[in-house]
Image 1 (cartoon, rainbow, N blue to C red):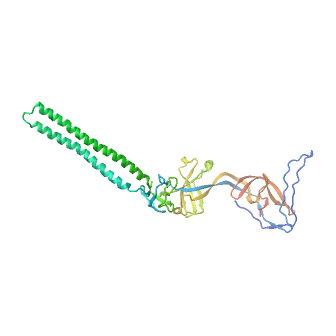
Image 2 (cartoon, rainbow, N blue to C red):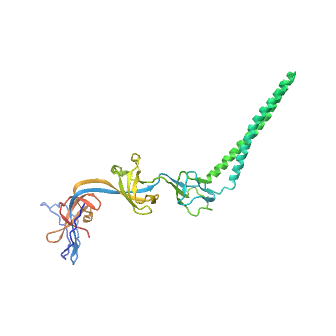
Image 3 (cartoon, rainbow, N blue to C red):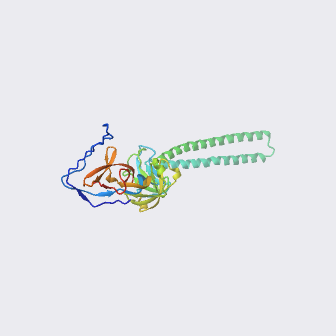
Length: 369
């Protein structure tokens, strides 16, 4: 959209105060009374430059702010409050794998108790299995004794059966004792393991530690306080939140500039998962100056075209002035004085504004300043 600037000229050193005189119909009614305008004035010549009203294509755009995100982000909190923070295993910039221990609270000798209970449970489960084996062997031995007894009587068979009942009763008591011990120890083990689990936090995925609060060791845990942040190490993306712009987000790619941070530079974004767009809109990075330097929450702006017009009149926006809800421009009369032309405006492009009426192509107006 070319803009023509003529060389600066000077208006005569006159006091240029202009009051718009309303047009009056024959019956005495005012067609429209405009507010008086006081134009710039001075004793010395005022310098000015002129710009032509041009014709061409015009696009109206709005700025859409996008924020850099990773595919996943873990904000790390301790699950219990009031415990002393014993150790932090990572620092900012560390690479972690899913399941890596990140931090833990002081829990006394819980780990030793857990080891002891696990040993007792395994031992009692083994002894419980031995009861079944011992019983089977003892029954087999007693049966063989009876079978090889020459001329055993019914009384001998009754005594054998009575011994079996006593044997099974004794062994059942042993079984119940082992079962009770195992059940009790398992309940205690589950409680201690729960306490240990609540004292530790682990990485939920492969990623990078992006933030760790300072001075945590020795302080008291708080379930509402985020102690560190882990972001995944996969390719990141940008997200915006302007659902009202969805009808205009139809381009195949967008240019964006990140002005601050390690990732500052120019980027080309392309729509990502467009079918899932709603309150949020997602963009992948096609190329960029410093992708490796981007960090979560880095932001940039893209321009979204909301309206287009071809072959329309426009002026630099700085030429257009306002009086209430009306717009006007200054022109220079043949006598070298400033005059006012009321204009109707339309689309607002980047630095230019559409002129719907009041001027024609080639008309020269005074630039502001």
